[in-house]
Image (cartoon, rainbow over all chains, first blue to last red; front, side):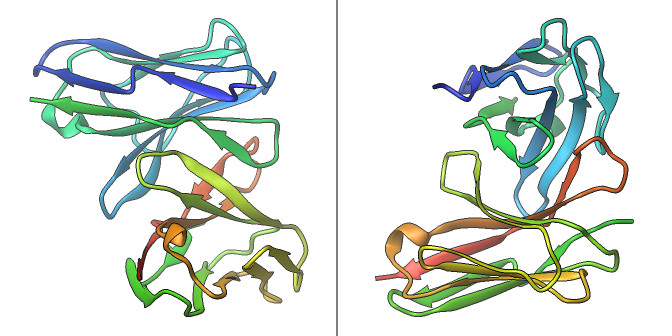
Amino acid sequence: NAGVTQTPKFRVLKTGQSMTLLCAQDMNHEYMYWYRQDPGMGLRLIHYSVGEGTTAKGEVPDGYNVSRLKKQNFLLGLESAAPSQTSVYFCASSDGYGYTFGSGTRLTVV
Amino acid sequence: GQQLNQSPQSMFIQEGEDVSMNCTSSSIFNTWLWYKQDPGEGPVLLIALYKAGELTSNGRLTAQFGITRKDSFLNISASIPSDVGIYFCAGPLTGANSKLTFGKGITLSVRP
């Protein structure tokens, strides 16, 4: 009963590099979300998906792209990482009620 | 917009004390959720409230859905060291396919 699994847990990138964060859920949830958490800023929604094959922009989408090719996976991509993208990234899934969160990916861009 | 306000940003209490946190909004919410985030982990749902005036308990935690539907309260009684963490309130955005908005969170520290 894994719930929501995020990989990797930690990553250091150089400015300009690209990477993909993977989120996988095994609860058959329709809705999936990517948030970033920064000190004093709370959780800010980057992108979300209301079902397989759909994506939508959240509050802070610039510099990120997402894909939901399979219902259980939601990928967050950074095409050209910037120091401002240093943050902790959380994925969550939902069946329409409360969210279940992953344990986060700590990303540092140097 | 439908923003949720939590203050102060940090609270410091002594082990054994009770603590109360509130969450307010200028908009009406039909559901209030309280999450806790342990250090190094993702937020976990503590209590969900679905009706104005509702009072719900989960162990030493009690939460209330305000009558005006614009606020909610979370009380922790007899605090223990493992209560340390960030407490978020959250509520669904209107017509937003179950998209939640979160308060900025209150970081609770418990001194032994």
